Length: 153
Image 1 (cartoon, rainbow, N blue to C red):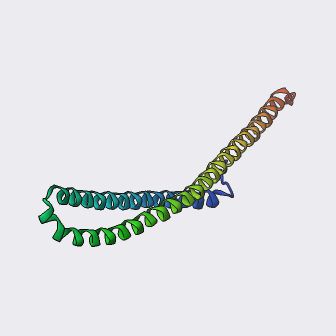
Image 2: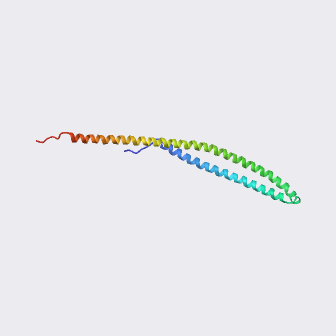
Image 3: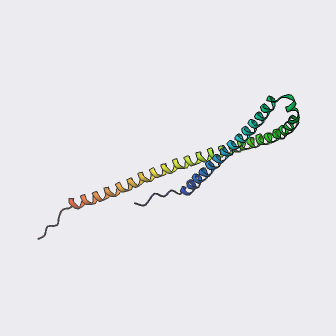
């Protein structure tokens, strides 16, 4: 019996590799989103700590540093705005990649189902052919046993 060979196997293999690559890209995007969020939180915590420290000081100590802190806070606000924009870009990119990944995974699953159906058809056909051969051999053996033997004189 010849081996089962599915003509779309290469398509399935490429689709599975693409799905793996997309999954890796999704993990990388998730990691980048986490890093940006951590950076945002760290910067916000630093600003809060600085403002709390400044708020605890007396007015005489606070006034000279307040102008510097407010100027730095303005720059920090711009940095945080850029980080939030980067986070939004990454989230949007992740959503797009997720949609592509889901379509690719659906395609792979469909191809796997089609391959399994083709394999089962192949096995049924091979079993049918094998049974036909057994039946033919059985008929031939039966015919040999049924024929009258020539009597030797």
